[in-house]
Amino acid sequence: MLFDQGRRGPGGRASHRSVSRESGQVLPDDDIAAHTTETFQFDHGCQFFRADSEEMSTGILEEWISKGWVAPWEGRLGCIGLPDDAPSLDFFGIPGREEKVYIGIGGMHMLPRKILESCKAQVHRGTRITSVRRQGDQWELRGTNGEAAYHDTKESIARQESDNVMGYADAVIFTDISSASDAWHRASAGIPDSLREQIPDKARIPLFACMVALSQPISGWVPFDGFTVAQGSNLWFAARSQSKPGFPRGGAECWTLVSTPAFAVQEISETTMRDPVSGEFRPQENEYLNSLPGPALFKAFLDAIKPHLPSDTALPDAIYLQAQRWGSGLPVPDELVATTKEIVGTRYCATLKSSLVFDRTNEAPLQDFVADDQLQLYYAGDFCSSMNPGFEAAALSGIHVAQYIAKSSSLP
Image (cartoon, rainbow, N blue to C red; front, side, top):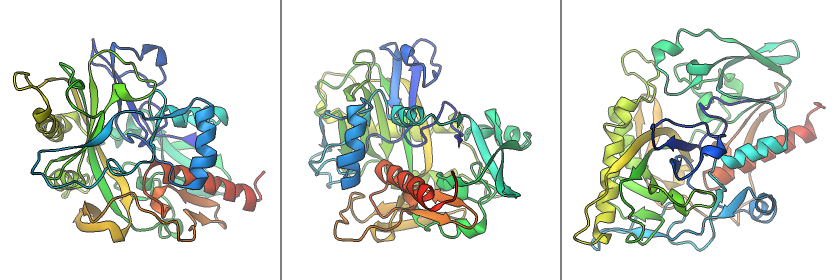
């Protein structure tokens, strides 16, 4: 059984959004027939993934490509900025590295869906596990579903829902770092201290994303489909949806804008994820997202592209704009952290010393998951990995913990 608290299905940081141009309504992610030029399409979390390890590049990736789940992103990738801007830290190797990057065909969300379909997993959507309790030889999973499960539901509504038994399991794997948070956090899963204390205490890189559909195309003038922005901007990376494999090629140009960590830390310090007085979780709310961080990132995008447009061409308007907060976007090894800021008990990385893509070919591989064999509780994810943070590290961690359980456990 897999329990996923996403509003439109499993994916997590590999999330996607399809929006009706006519109504502005967000469409079900699985309604592929509706994904046409009449919809705005965005990957609003992970923009692509890398395959830096031999295990990923020569085995797993080849299988995914052969099945038609994944393809290289063949877009024009680079860096833009004004001539006097300082060079920027790359965005996961863009620009500066020659290795290919990869996309789930039709959106990053399609890859976890294909994986789940192929293994015939029983998926419980829109379900948040709030606690695990020992009942005899099994774990009782308690939680809630529907509106109370989602990150953006008002706390006053979520509080009204009571926890119910969602199922029983011999072994439990947690994969969301927020599930290891204290009880105040909406995603807390009541992980026992004996397991939680083993999860590496890495600083978190928060990020904001902003999805925008433009009133007029700019790709004929802007030299890149995915670009890192030179330092001095609130914008770290921008990606054009129509350049990705499996996305509709026509319609309004859709771009996903990703903030710098420094911008996100400043925003979160001003509008904290936990109420500093009541201690309650503060959900994402559009009134805030689309009045402050969203417009700020769109302005940074316009500032970045303006030098590339003809002088007699007006800047585009946003005919659709929606921002998203990724409060625990990425883990970062301490040796890469330049500055941190603690906000209501959480340690965030505001600036980096160097790229998040780093080589560890001379180091022996470390176990990239946490295991409590006595309790048969496990934690997997890139927070446990010594690899570059992101999709690849998280995927391999999940594969390795599954292999470990299959080999060492007495479970059938």
